Image (cartoon, rainbow, N blue to C red; front, side, top):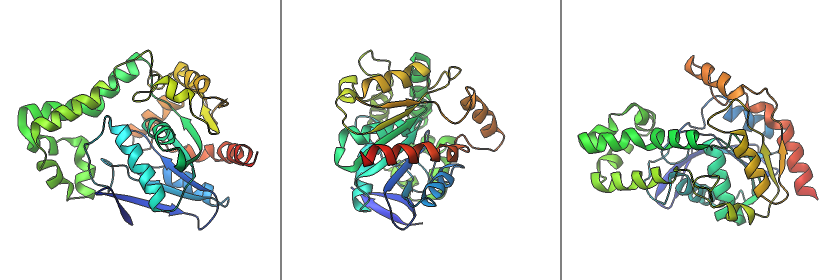
Length: 288
């Protein structure tokens, strides 16, 4: 698997398609590019003449772990911008879902030179959804570091994949100062506290309102407590000229995919269904 060094962090990636408009796809959670649906969406777009990057963010898959920046999403956004520049894939159509939507939005806002257009689905939000995220991403690692030191952190199931697929990550973890690690993750955790002026954690609403690029927002399901419909509608309203569209599935898609994931399927398995709307959006938005 090819890797490229971005500011001292090795990032694993793949490129699908030899030519055409550049795209990049970012999944959510700490899921890798190998999660069902991600590569398949890239291949579907590539078959339509696009050049598509999929990648392992820092702290996922085969890439290095990295604990810098005001938030994990901000750090990953800065790395994504560096990756697109290194691969000569700018400006790109930046696509992301769930945590990947947040990374995509931050990338477009912080690095407008790398973004040609932006498409997001399953944008995390709402009081319950955000509080769950803070605990999910940071809570157990903070507890383990307090009680057992960095040896306890590397024993956590949530870091098993990045240690198995990139064994050098173990030494990166163990080299971290326990107190500094706790302080960093507490800072990352704080970003998820609901803020009336920041619909999406880590980016103020006025920064969203200043974006000037074609943007597509897929409306979240009414039944989804983690990516509330109100959040998707609010983000679409904030970004000038953005398009709010219905996704190619029913209201309970997120819950259904969660059940499927527990049975060995993938949260993003049906992402290839997004391809027709994404292509239509890019063709219309970037040719005008």
